[in-house]
Amino acid sequence: MIESLQLLTRSAAAFVAAMMLALGAGPAAAGTASTTMTVSANVANNCTVTATDLAFGTYTGVTQVDSQFTVDVSCADPTDLNLSDDGGINPETGEGGRRRMAHSGEFLTYRLSEDAGFATEFFVTDSLATNTLAFPKTIYGRIDQTEGGLVPGTGEYTDSVTWTVTW
Image 1 (cartoon, rainbow, N blue to C red):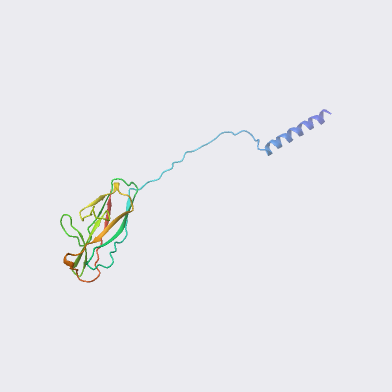
Image 2: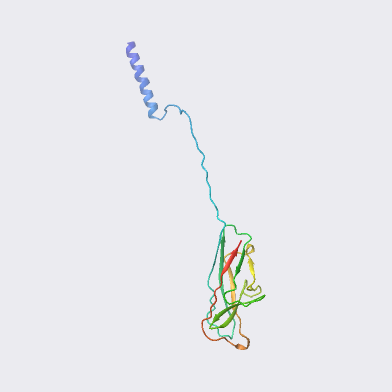
């Protein structure tokens, strides 16, 4: 009988051990290990500037023609920026010079302004402090009525203007 009891006790102990392993109650952990990783990113110190075209359409010289375009600036750090243009390829020289489109040696002057009423005209030598501007920025263009109705020769007048952002 003692042998039967011992056999029954050993069988019960084996059954309980098998059940504990099956239910995940395994032996206690022997230790732990961990590591630390570095997370980093580099924000480049750069800006981009884009501009849409300024198209006045047909000009007769009898009335002024207004149009507008957009300049957009995107920078990693949008503070202390200046936006300027090169005055185009045919600018008038001197302080307060105006921009000019050219065709066959003749010129057609145009003006730019920060507002539609031209209260804040943007001359060739000017730049805009962009830390006070919202982007994209609308810039207004105007060809004024010519004096005495004199219109330069017919044809397609063009200019090419480069916009620059400095920071």
